Image (tube, rainbow, N blue to C red; front, top):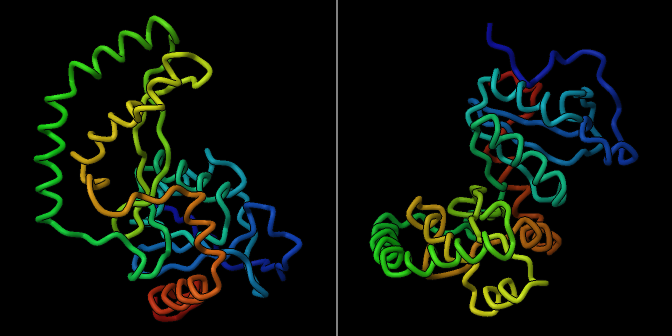
Length: 236
């Protein structure tokens, strides 16, 4: 039996700003399998206890008909990361709700050029990467890679790969100085997550800071409302 992350609309609470710090209180909107996660307003909204636990949220997403999640940057970096981690575990794509004018363009031909260039670069630098792996295992044993959330095409969140470095060590400072810790991001380019040229991918912090600009914030809210309906809509 398929269950949904959206509960039956019973026992509604009048939710105000004082509850904003609780993950269980948020505004959810959806249409045709698209779930929009927004900050609270002066609305009646059911309390969603599953949002207080990542494990519970993952299970809800896995057993729900939601095909993708669109999240508002106004929720803040911590909640963006919370939802991104849960969606990753549930194998659900997650996007930032941003206006089309601020999204990285989807250019198939440019992506092909990037793929070829990244493949050739990987062949050239593979001996360097192998040498770095050996040095890292000698001077700072542990996991080789770390992953950071970035904003890609159409606002999609993805994990950017980097070599794990400790800048307190000589090796870490050297790798950071010459940006060698970013070499694994060539794999992200091969996957189509990011481009070798053009604007750099935003971090979650970048997206939250950009959202604080009034003109950007207003346009994001208008676009979200025009594409997604409230839970109590009768036209779903």
